[in-house]
Image 1 (spheres, helix red, strand yellow):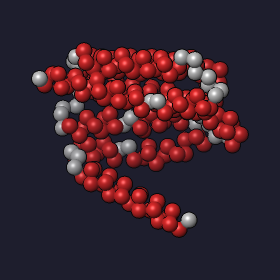
Image 2 (cartoon, helix red, strand yellow):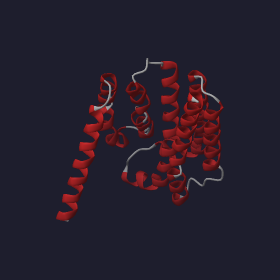
Image 3 (tube, rainbow, N blue to C red):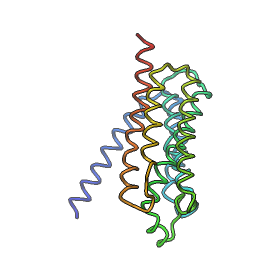
Image 4 (cartoon, helix red, strand yellow):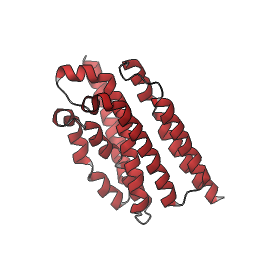
Amino acid sequence: MHSCTMFCAAFLALQLAVGVTWFCTLTPLAKQVGLASVGMVGAYPLMKRVTYWPQLFLGFTYNWGAMMGWAATGLPIRWHVILPLYAAGIFWTLLYDTIYANQDKECDRKVGVKSSALALGELNGAALIGFALASTALLVTTGVAAGSGPAYYVGIAGVALHFTWQLAGLDLNDPGACGDRFRSNTWVGLLVFLGMAADRLLLAI
């Protein structure tokens, strides 16, 4: 037990050291934007006791990086690009974390904590489709606002196909299936990144 505690403390110290070192390299604006999210990060673990929509709060918190990342570039702020990207991330978080919440809904109900899965009830399936459509539409809006080329939209088409695969035939009462779909969302982030990176690369050639 003692060795485990020491390892955890050392691992935490390493993460903090890396985080502080990285934070010091950011632009002044990016530091300000990052610090503005600290309250949300601290409050999130309490949200399941307060609201049936901790997944929405997580969306606002976790996707703050869209604004922080832009600020870190030092480029002029373009809200018409940043805000749709931020909103797309929020709906994506609602999608994958509501799927995750369906995995835990029976346990959550027993212990008295809240989640979007419990709030939505029989509307879970329809809501997940809505979240997927909204996220995809907002990613397209982001591309239009940024003047992105075809490569970006190929990536977003991949996202749309992945969302379709996630939801097609998903049994929300099967914890194993929900867990598998939740974990598959790492591919969504990769597809968006590859689309953006390929678009920037082709524009630079």
